[in-house]
Amino acid sequence: MSSTPDIDDLVAQARQAVAAATTIEEIREVSTAVSGKKSPLAQAGRHLGTLDPEARKALGQRLNAARAAIEQLIEERRAEVGAAELAREMEADRIDLSEFIDGSIPAPARRGHLHLVTQTRDELEDVFVGMGFEVAEGPEIETDWFNFGALNIPPAHPARGMWDTFYLDLGAPESTLLRTHTSPVQVHLMEEAVAGDRLPIHAVMPGRCYRRDTPDARHLAVFHQIEGLVVDEGISFADLAGTIHVFTTAYFGPDIHSRLRPAYFPFTEPSAEFEVTCTICHGEGCRTCSQTGWIELGGCGMVDPAVFTTVGIDPDRWTGFAFGFGIDRCAQMRHQIADMRALIENDIRFLRQF
Ligand SMILES: [Zn+2]
Image 1 (cartoon, rainbow, N blue to C red):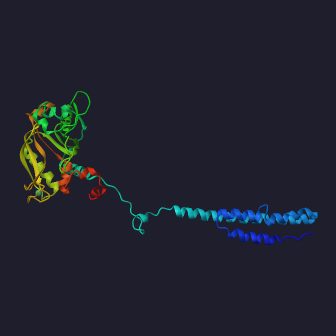
Image 2: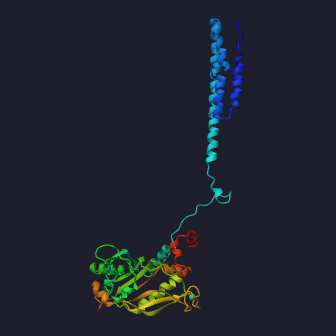
Image 3: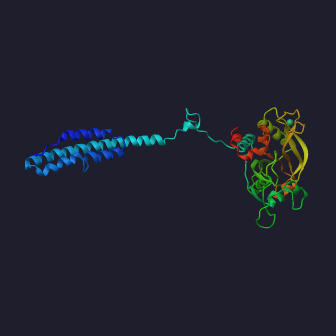
């Protein structure tokens, strides 16, 4: 008669071993040790064949119950350890955003904003819309006719030297170009107004322009202009001067004054350059304004009757004025930006200032 193994002891030992396992790998090892083929439990079953039927049945039932109990202990422990391991992995993978700043406070999300040139354009549009102007746009690729011809600048006209032009390899040579100013939008507007019998016109036309200039502190090869056009009955130079005055005061503030100086443009007669008080020295005189106290902002004048005739507007009935100036220049002046090239360099430290 062989000794009966203490099955309760085997279960108790297995319970201890399983509870001590802290990883899935350890549980696998413990599982083999307490319930595998070489485990004490398996060895206890080897006596079964030597027992009489009654005793064999009784021992068999106890062994089966013990095996089931140990397997349940293992499964429960496997679930516990598995959950703990998952939690550890998640904790290890967690990205602590506060580490990127100072280790304590999570960084607030930094929102982007519109580029200074876009802000300036929006603000200028608002000023003119407040004065009763509509906003119009036109294409950046133009024909020679819209950019020059219709504006009283026929081919070979000496005034063409005022604009260094990017021509496109499209159609006849020098027939297609990147517009050198927003003035061709005026031609489109006037032609559309004549075709649709929609005179008068009070519009501003902001947009991107291109010239073959070498960029420097005050010039860019790709820049932004805003152009104004008024065509109505009884419009005089005083209306033009008043519009320039109201705009400069609204945009730059009441301390900034404007003045007009005689100039020449092929599409206006008379023509003027308009200047505003230097924002750096407030009129005292400095290097930026060449000691004059004034900065040139743009050009303007009364629309030349020849331009009206070209687009089919009766110059005996209608008069008008036009003006144009640089949006980038406005931003540079108001925010006292020493070098205009900063506007296109996309240095985030610069852009965040505005
Ligand atoms: Zn100055």
